[in-house]
Length: 82
Image (cartoon, rainbow, N blue to C red; front, side, top):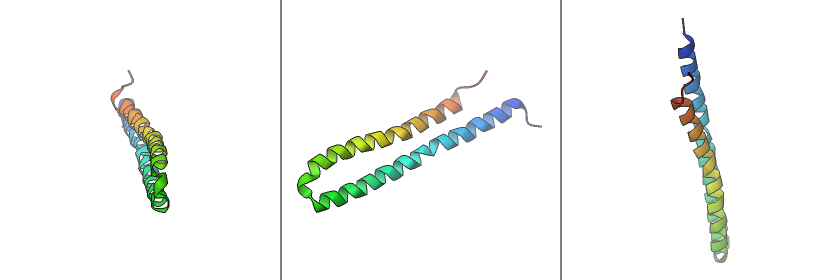
């Protein structure tokens, strides 16, 4: 028989794993942005300064989703219900 505490611990672990999946989305988003940036710079090298600044802002916004997912997973793992 599974006790209530074991069930909650298991569900917290599953929830933490699902929350970390947000990192996959961030990785895919940054990879797509990088490939399109390189294509744009190859076509118009003179616009690289403007493109790079927009790229860094987009990467920062995309990376925050991964950080939020990590934060949620750490909270689920280490903050216990009493």
